[in-house]
Amino acid sequence: MLRSRTILGLTIVAGFSTGALAATQVIHQQGRAFSEESITVKKGESITFLNDDTIPHNIMSASKGNEFNLGSQAPGSATDVSFKELGDVSVICAIHPRMKMSVKVVD
Ligand SMILES: [Cu+2]
Image 1 (cartoon, protein in one colour):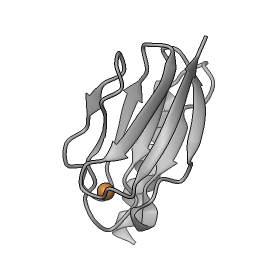
Image 2 (cartoon, protein in one colour):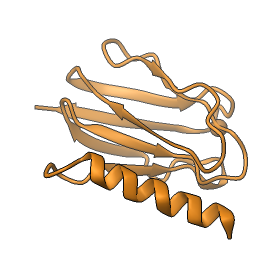
Image 3 (cartoon, rainbow, N blue to C red):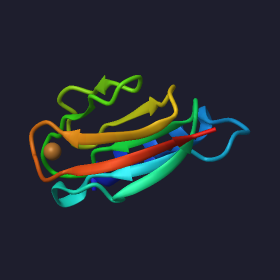
C-alpha cells in the first residue's frame, strides 16, 4: 500500500517537471528487468528510471558522451536521466548483468 502510493507521487512529480514538452518516458525495473528493450528519445530529452522492484538496482551507462551512473537506487525511487549526444546508448544494471536495454538518441 505505502509503496504504491510512493510510486504514484513520483510519477506526478515527473509529469510536472516535463512542462509542455512531450511526456517523459518511464522505464520500469520490475522483476530485475527493464520494461523496454530499446526506446528512442530526442537529444536533450530525459527518461525516468523508476525502481518499482523490491530490490535495489544500479542503472548506468558507459556509452561515450552519455555516461551516467545512478548508484544504488532504492525500491520506490525514480531518477531522470537526460541524453546529450546522438547515437546508441547501452544501459545496464551494475548489479544484475542480465538487465540491459538500449536508448537511441536522435535529432
Ligand atoms: Cu539490477
